[in-house]
Length: 407
Image (cartoon, rainbow, N blue to C red):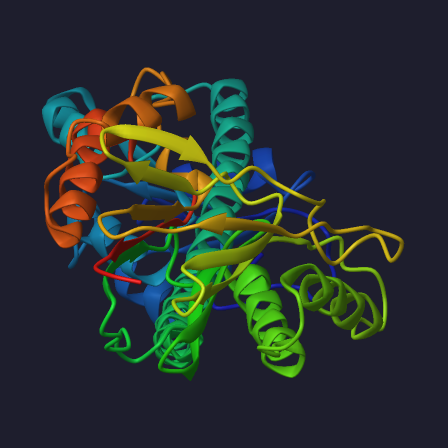
């Protein structure tokens, strides 16, 4: 094929460019290659580059010594024009070292003059396979870059969404604080102190205190199953149920029954959330506390160095409409300390998964018989925190202490 000709369209054959100023060499190569390949011949590197044939070539066969631009410089230009084309250098023995150096610069192979045409055909076949591998690598690399760009974009979007979620959780956490009293009410006959640590930004533990008059107030202490957003939403619904049902004239067991009914009827479909709740009414006129414990961990009454438990009097709320709740009344005296807590305080673990345990928690209470209520709560929390160390709290933690100053 004459120099300067363009590649035939839809030929389907591999394309070979031969650049050699020796017509005998180029003619022999054309004769050997033209049956299997599309071949273009050029006598100078400049002509080959100017023709536009190089970017579409599969193999370039070039003499190391060309008029004008030599083979080494030509190799660099080929690599600029085509990252995939395989280059075979033709050289004599005197330029062998130079030919070897071209291999370091990206040539695929070199042939020594005089060469055997069969050897050249084999070299061209290998060069074409090499070109296919290079193209496949380029394609895969391009796809990888595209996928990396997509992943980076997705990662940025996820990070932005995570930041937005964190902001929304902060807002939700601030709103959830409304489940707790803004400050513990000042009640002349008691001292109170509370500490709460959610396992996540949002939790399901909460308490509230409703002051009815100077002689009477109600305490609500609750723990919603699970933690996080679902537990927080259920806790908000539960607080609505409590405020709708609380009545100083109603016995605690009746109020808990109304809470259970409110939660069940308020769900459009079963959520499988439930809650344990302690509802008690402190009556200083009678010197007593009337309460219903719907499966909360038993609050502890500390009196003169001994402890007793306010055991559960009914099942948890929010699941079974036929649940029955009982009420009990307990006398309270000056100096009594009542401690309310969620199960997260004694279910914490060491890094080796050893659990603190309820019995150890109860034994701990007897270490602080004469402390102020705030000192007692903080001391209990510190001991449990030291025990858990890096294990941390796996559930929401809430402690509330009430010290009776008089009845």
